[in-house]
Length: 289
Image (cartoon, rainbow, N blue to C red; front, side, top):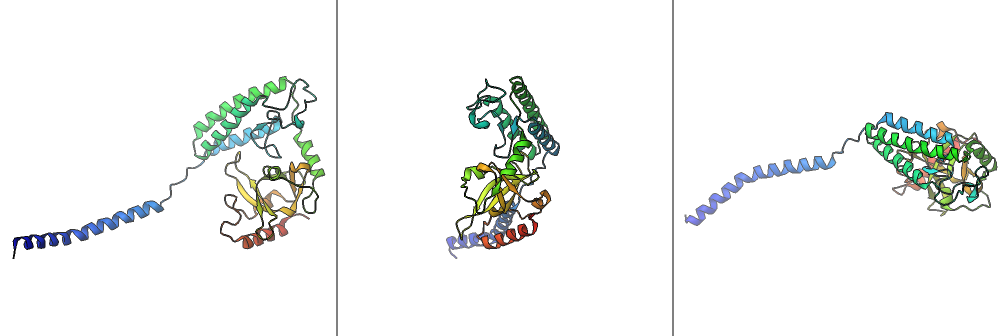
């Protein structure tokens, strides 16, 4: 046999011996890659104590009446800091204070930003950093509230305002009133007793009629993070003038048990008819008449 043929034969034999081992290694490598691709990182456990402290601080803000969320104001804006009060007129008890423009905007911006940051840290399980930011937020807000009290800025009468809004609310179905999307999205939702049910996070249009079919109500969570989304038929609402508040004849536990949508998507797979049938059946059975 020629030398070059013998060398080629030996090379082929060596390659055949190596090939199974290489193939096995490749298969093992591919298996590990596939396993890694399907592995999901374990989500961090939230810092429950800081979440509770944030919720308690939110309750203080609402009680003070200088900083509101929901009911048309949008959480994170000082009551009188961004022109949300009395249509920009001077306040009756603080005639030297103009409510429009960016009056005292800086502390409002700082409080809003710090609260959002602390909430994110709490959701990620960062207890100590969350508490540190919350402590700073309390300090800034306390100075802000003292300044408002010293200037005799009146507190918001949330209870009285809400009561009047509920009285003035009329059914959206058959009403002559027209609503803009920016009026509806962000509006607070309450029941006739004035209990908070959530805020409007989205509007769902019917693909068959092109009209509003549902409002997606954001519920729970802390400062807008970790909310659950509940679709409710549009025709079941009553709206206060200007849609500053929406009224739904429902109890909180009925909202808790209602069908939910994920990430504000009503029918992500095109199953609008099936999803709407489920939602409609629930609310027919659970809405107060």
